[in-house]
Image 1 (cartoon, rainbow, N blue to C red):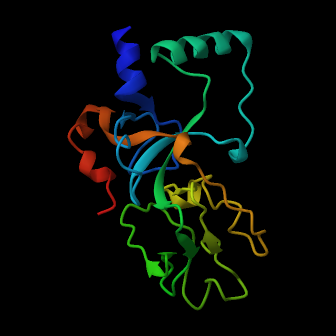
Image 2 (cartoon, rainbow, N blue to C red; image 1 turned 180 degrees about the horizontal axis):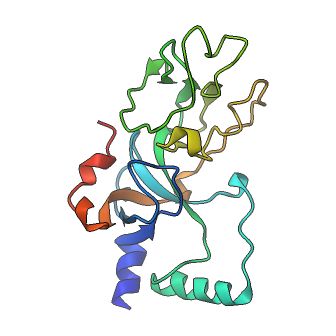
Length: 211
């Protein structure tokens, strides 16, 4: 009961299921999510957050009765897998922001300013003058201007070339205006503040930040 209360209201441990946040988070890492982080403030650019997978991000996985029962137990106690599907990404755009890519150097722009992203791992190909946003061979890194609504957060993976994130459908030539996928404030569970496993990452919460 105590574990359930702690994981339900204070902190929760999640296992990283994919490589979309490498090398910040690796597959199998157990991360500690601070569920109180946004009680009195909103998510900020650069935060690494866990959020419920919104409906627009794809269909839920098919599960049998046995797995559903295990998931029900996990939801109730905070122990083991849950039925709700969770994702982990980095906040790049906030409500009201305009986000696009790319600058002449291949950087993401937020409200017209280039963003420094030292955490990016294996970005999509971009060579100014050879494969960029204006060359015949267009860079897959590019996406058009996205204006976020009042409850829309734009989330990207640090492993930019291996991330099914907010702009995955916007990177194609002629992508529709509604290509962006966002998460609302109510979808966001909390901020990733540290690691439970592996043990050599204890105390390395600073590596999650954008600076």
